[in-house]
Image 1 (cartoon, rainbow, N blue to C red):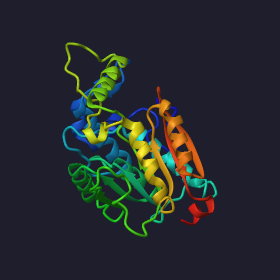
Image 2: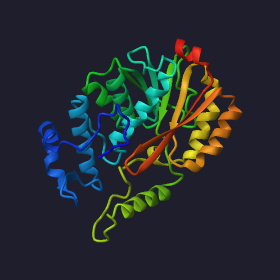
Image 3: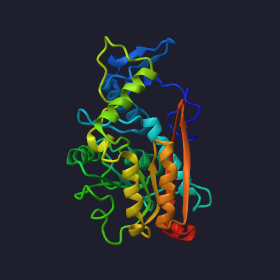
Image 4: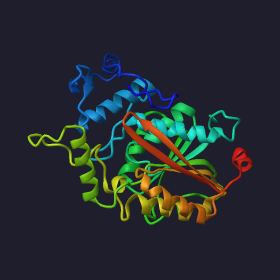
Length: 306
């Protein structure tokens, strides 16, 4: 059971494996019985996770095609959906408590990745329009294939950020406006830190069997997806530093923050940047606690009138 998921999250209760297999027959090869005798998959098997995601997206969202190149980040869809719903609640504050829907709401997904997950979920749950950006041409091409295969070209635009040292500069066009940004930043400062994090997770899950060859990286992932110089703290700091220049073009800036210890320096940096409001929104999925950081340079009236 997943009692802490957002109430609007479609991933409530136990997974209905017969229904998932009916829509995605290849999933049957990966179904196992967990220690409690319940159907599940081996989350230490990247191929199983990829097919499982495909089945979830087809059964719950109607996504006809979804796949990623080998070695790219395969996201846990329920947790990603919680972030989207949390962002919708944030936007609701400027719309009489009701999450805004429809094409008039445009969102910017920073580092959309090969999986294109936030644009898919945000559009299918709220009908928002998205611009997804990434510095990796392979990731952009993969995301474009997903968009085209599902006839979502009018709702989701993809754009390569050709200046890897920047996040917003050189990406946005004049007069573009966005209600909100989303971002799943590279959390780690090095490849070794990312590998150590995966090994720690395998131990915590009781899967660190020396007789078994486990994937080096939990959920896969390329360098630009999982680590960068200075890790999460430096990446989000750069986003904050660039945000005042586009503060009148974007209603709310939001970004996941994996390490609670990074919040105080990031909040101090936001204050120095001159933001009018800042939030830390907590999210919980089972045993995992996560959060996103949000800040704005606009008044509620400015954001509501977008």
